[in-house]
Length: 150
Image (tube, rainbow, N blue to C red):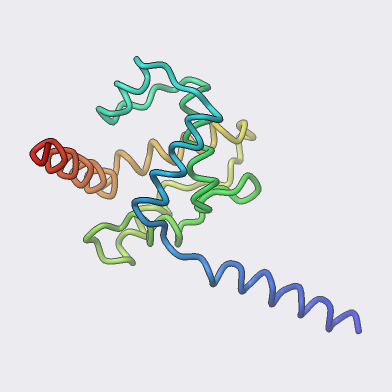
């Protein structure tokens, strides 16, 4: 009987991970709005972040942790889920190439850093990678298109 319960729990946990899908642009926007409310950022910090400069300060770290957690690509026990990050941000990269990049950026927090520092460290690495370059180019293009349509 114990084995049955263990199998049932594993099935539920497995299906929870299998059911994950990348977030849409509107879902990400909603998450960002929620996280700014929960972790307010100064106008100066927001201006820097719009230029893809993420200062290593508590408010930014907490905001990034919030967004990654709500996107379900990071958890405080395991850190980043490389497969999910690769699916969410691969852009026009092959998923296996994106996964390799992300796996090179994640760690198990061997140094015992606070969770926000751990999440920030992974974010910084990903943003310095080929994935980060593609994300930045995508965002810049969307901003240009939005400004032209005004």
